[in-house]
Image (cartoon, rainbow over all chains, first blue to last red):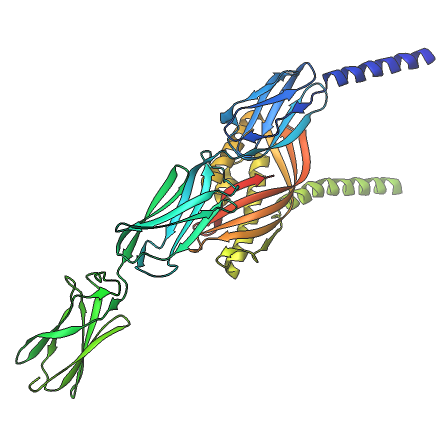
Amino acid sequence: MRKLLLIGLAIAACWFASAQANAAELRIPQTAVAGQALSIGTTGNGDATFYLVGPGATLKRKIRLGEDVQVKGEELRSAGRWVAIVRGSGGPQSQVFYVKPDKPAILNFSARPSRVPVARPNSVSGVAFIFDKFHNLILDPTPVKFSLSVGGTTASHTINSKEGVAYINSSSAPKAGAAQFVASVDDVSVNRVVEQVASDPCNLRMHVIQREKDQIIVQTDPIRDCTGNAVPDGTIVTFTQTDSTGRSVVDARIKKGVARAQLPASNNATIAVAAGVVLGNELHVGGGQ
Amino acid sequence: MKLARLLILTIGVAIAISGAVPLLKRILADTKPSVQLNIAATTPRAVEDTTQQSIVRDYSAAWQGLSSALANNNTAPLAENFTGYALDKFMERVKQQAQSGLKTRIVDHGHKVDAVFYSPDGSAIELKDTATLETQVLDGDTVIHSDQAQVHYYAIMTGAEDRWKVRVLENTQ
C-alpha cells in the first residue's frame, strides 16, 4: 500500500514537472502600433495553437512554444484592445494588450452651411474627425489647421483636436464667391467649398426712369450689400405705390444688378421700395413732379 | 404507490427546470444592455431630449447586435446598427472568426456614457463609454480566454434613415 502511494506521488510529481516545463507564457511588447509588425515571445516547449483576437480581426495558427510569433502589420490594423492566447498541452494562457493608432492619414471633414451670406459672424462651421490610414480614430490631441479663403484673402486658425475631433465656428469672409474651406493635418488636407453670397442690400435707392400717360417705370440703382458685393440676380425687390385709390404692389426680381417695375400713373402717389427686411427710399410722384 | 407519484412529480419538475433555464438564459441574452447617458458636458451643441432617448435606444441596440453577431458569427445584426468604418471592421471580425472556428461571448453589464461632442448641424455625436464587460473567447465549444474588465470606448454615431448608427467604435486603454 505504501509502495503504491509512493509510486502515485512520483507520477504526480513527474506530471506536474512536465506541465510546468511545457507551460506556455506570452511576452508582448509594451507598445504596439496599428499596421506595424509585432513579435510576441512565447515560453515552454512543444506544439501549441496561437490566437489573436482584436476589434476587427482574429488569427489562429499553429506555433512551436519557445519561438517568437511574428504578427504581420496587415494583421494588426485595428487600434484598441487585443487578446493574445496560446493553447498548448497545459491550459490556455492569454494576455490583453492595446494597439495604438498610426499617424493621421484621413480627415473626415464636414463644412456647414454650403451657402452663407458674407460677413456674418459665427456662421460657418467645420468639423474634422482624424483617422489613421486604417480608419482608427486618433484620440491624441492633434493640431488641425482650418483656413477659409475667398478672393485672395485667407483667414486661418489652428485648433487642437480633442478626443478625435476638431471643431471651428468662424465668420464668413466679407467678399462674395466660392470660398475654399480647408482642413489640414500635416500633409493631409481636405477641401470644401462654401458659397458666400452677398448679404442684405445696403442703401437701396430707386428713381423714375420713364413716365408715360398711364404708367410710370421705376428702377433701382445697382443693388449691393454693405461690403459692396452685388446682390444676386433673382432676389425679389418689392415696389409699393400708395395713392388715394389704394395700394399697388409689384414684386420684381433683380436682373443685371437692378430691379425695375411698371406702376400705374397717379396724380399723387408715394412709391416705396424694399428688399427683404431692408427699406429703401420713397418717391412722391404726381402733378408736375 | 405514493413513492411512484413522488418520483413522477420530481421528474416533471426536473423537466420543467431543464426547459426553463435555457429559455431564461435566452431571454436574458436578448435583453438590451443598460446605457446611462450623461449630456452635461456636450459641446458645441446641446443634445435635445428626443435625441438623447434615441441615442440611448440605438447605442444599446448596437451593443446587443454586436454581442449577437460575435456570439453566433452572424453579420445580420451588424448591418442594422452599424455603418461605415465600424461596420466594415466588425464584418471582417465575424468573417475571420467563422473561418477560424472561433466565437466571442460578451456578457454586458452596462455602459456609462458621456456625450462629448454633438456636431452643430446635429448629424453626428461622439460618445465616451465606460463599459463593464465579461468576454469569453471560444474555440469550438472550449473557452480559451475569459476576462471581466471595464473597457473604455469612443463611439461616433451618425443619423441614418430611421435611427442612429454607430460609425466608429474604438476601445482605448
